[in-house]
Length: 240
Image (cartoon, rainbow, N blue to C red):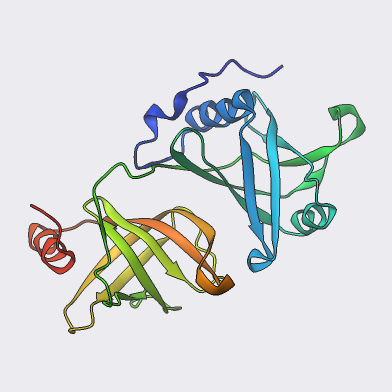
């Protein structure tokens, strides 16, 4: 029998990642109780798996989700070692990854997919802070993970004091929640720049103009000094 859950637990998710199994179970059970849709973008966005959480194991060993109406998406999910899912309950963005998807057994009720209990749930209150749109005709380039082993280019759509909003990049790249991006260089067209570390909070595939797609990740700056904070406010025109 499913454990009792607060149907509105995301009050504890403001800009943070949950790793305690009890807190994770509380959030997942709320998605079950709300019958909240969960989505996973597969194959570089070519397939979208849409489902709902059906059951959260009280012992926190596994979860069960419903089958997708799209058989191809269901088969694609089952062929993966893990998948990242996101939901949008009441103005929040909730994201988690779960591994080892397998068809449920006959004694587990209606056909579904069983996955291991997630280790992390990321929560983000959408538009919780003032965001500053990128100035017209000014491209903000971000060399992501420049200090890492696999850097790549991205663009910045807007910035808030709490982090970076809508970091857009190649749709074939996927950044899992909790990924730390070291030494990211953010530049404007006049050559001004700042180098920061960022932590990925959530990622999702988005549609752009002319039918193009990109991955979009919400991130937060890590361990900023007062000087770096002032530099960010100057570079992106944030109000004091």
